Image 1 (cartoon, rainbow, N blue to C red):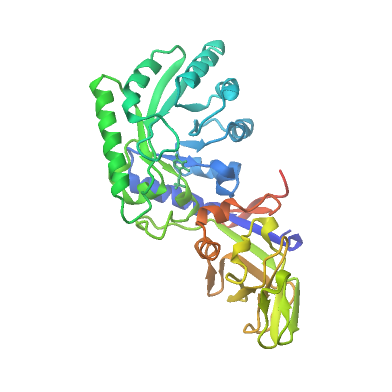
Image 2 (cartoon, rainbow, N blue to C red):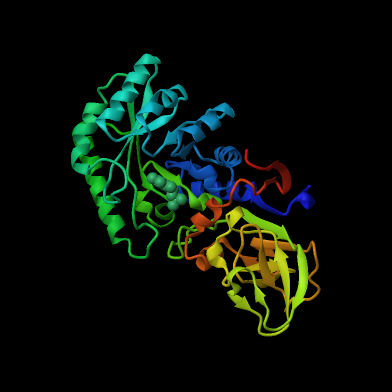
Length: 385
Ligand SMILES: *Cc1c(COP(=O)(O)O)cnc(C)c1O
C-alpha cells in the first residue's frame, strides 16, 4: 500500500501512548492529564490521537472548535470534551446538545449557555478562563470573583473549573509566568475565601507541565509534548518524549547537472561543480515550509541531502553528490530517522524560522497519514476527509 504513495506521514500511536503515560507518571495520580487535540491533533489526526490518548491515561479531550468536537461525538467518543476558546453565541445550542464542557468568559455567553441548558433540560459544566497576563482570552482577575459568583447561580450551569494560560512557561526566564501564577493563586484564594468551591483548577501547558511543577494544580493541558515534541529548546527535559510523526517520500528522478547550472524557480541556486541531484515530490502544497529552500535537508540512504533551489508547490530538488548509488524510488525521510541519520521537526522549524508546532500542524490533508500501533499499520487516512 505504501508503495502507491508519493509522500506520506506516519504517526506512531505507540509514541503518543508512551508520552501520555510518561507525563501522567510525572504529574502523579492527583493531577488529570487533558489531551489537547486542537488543529486536527496538531496535524496528527483527531480521532486516532484522541483514542490512544484516552486509552493511555488522559481523562478528557481539549480543543477550540465546536465542529471538531462534533466529529468526535459522531465518531462515538463519550469522554468529556472541553472547549477552551471563544465560541460564537450561535453555536451554543449545538455545543450543549453535544454535551461539551465550555469556557465562559462573558455574561452574554454565560446567559446563552444557561438558556440552552434550560431549553435542553441539561446541566452544562463550565470553566472560567482568567487572563492573568497573556492578554489573549479570558476575563480580568479583578472581575473574576464577582463573575464566578454570579455565574454559579445561573440555572443549568455547573461551575467545574477556573483556569489560566502562561505566556513564558517555555522560556528559561520564567519570571513573567511566575507573576501570572501568583495572580492566579491569589484569585483561587479569594474564591475559596468566598466559599466558592472550584473542583478543577488548571494552568499548565506542556512547558509548565515539564518545568513548573508548582503550576500543575488539578489538571495539566498537554499539547505539543503529547506528540513527542518539546515546546522549546529551553524547556526542561524532565520527561523523555518520543516524536510521533515522521514524513516520508521517495526519489522521483536522479540526474547530474554540469557546473554553472541553476536549479528551480528564480535561479537561487547555481551548481559550482558537476552535481548529482534528486527530485523529491514534496513541496509547500503539502505544508512543507518554503522558507527551508536552500537551507534544509532530507535523508536519503541515511545521509543528509541538502535542499537546493526554491521549494516548489509539489516538488523540491536535493543534492545527492556525496551519497553513493541514489536511484529512483529510494526512500526519502523529510522528518524522522533513517539509518544513522535524523531530521527532526525542530530542525525543519529552525530552517523555516518557526516552531515545531507549526511544522507538524501545517501538513495538509492531501498527505496521507499512516497509523502504527504496536508496530503494525492499523489505519490509513487518505485525502481530504
Ligand atoms: C494550545 C493550548 C495548550 C497546549 O499547549 P502546548 O504548548 O501545546 O502544550 C494549553 N492551553 C491552552 C489555553 C492552549 O491554547
